[in-house]
Amino acid sequence: MSTLGLKLRGLRVKSGYSLRKAAVAIDIDVAILSKMERGERKFSKELVLKLADLYKANSDELVIDFLSEKVLYELEDEDFGLEALKVAEKQLKYKKQKDV
Amino acid sequence: MSTLGLKLRGLRVKSGYSLRKAAVAIDIDVAILSKMERGERKFSKELVLKLADLYKANSDELVIDFLSEKVLYELEDEDFGLEALKVAEKQLKYKKQKDV
DNA sequence: ATTACCTTTGACAAATTATGTCAACACAAA
DNA sequence: TTTGTGTTGACATAATTTGTCAAAGGTAAT
Image 1 (cartoon, rainbow over the protein chains, first blue to last red):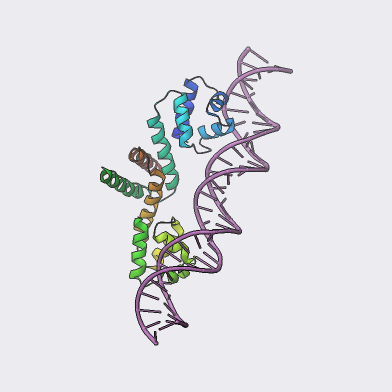
Image 2 (tube, helix red, strand yellow; image 1 turned 30 degrees about the horizontal axis):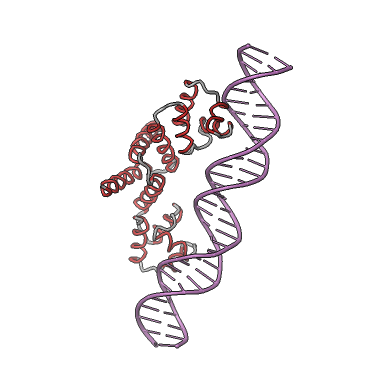
């Protein structure tokens, strides 16, 4: 179950692309795209951006989903995942504020 | 700058271990521990637990720091890091609740 | 100044993961 | 049957992570 995969598959179908055509358009093997859409392989940010562009979709939300999945992947089966996210958030906020 | 590294170094010194002795105790090369404490290499969860045990420290906080650093590492230089964390948190909460 | 510690550094090998390539399969529609 | 669809698995290649080692530099005591 991959939110990003589902979204991108939905966008692809809505845009009228077959897997093969979309894969050719962004210059990767069909097998890879198939697997990525089904969550069997991880997307790369680069490909997410290419697909967003191809489907004329807003890339921000897709990138956020992409990053979120990457993060959740690191935390799977961790007892303290939620606590870790909170700590990470705090540090990120602090860092951001500091950069101003 | 690594929170976890600093904490573990502090604990080590407080516990009276030299780098070498601590490394031997948890069965890794000194070089690795040195680099990990200074944030030049990433800790593994396994080693964090071993060190927590060695220093008789509570492991929960250390593991949380460990995970948090892992997450932040994935998000470094990302414009939407904070948004991604929020999404990840929401999904994790949902998943947790569902498991009950 | 030599001995005995300590920590750091960098080069390298080994192992593990990630990524790319390909060919074949199954299904349905024309 | 041919064409188009998506899926699968085996395999090679590339990239990253991890482990090993030897040497260097520092400090302090003898």
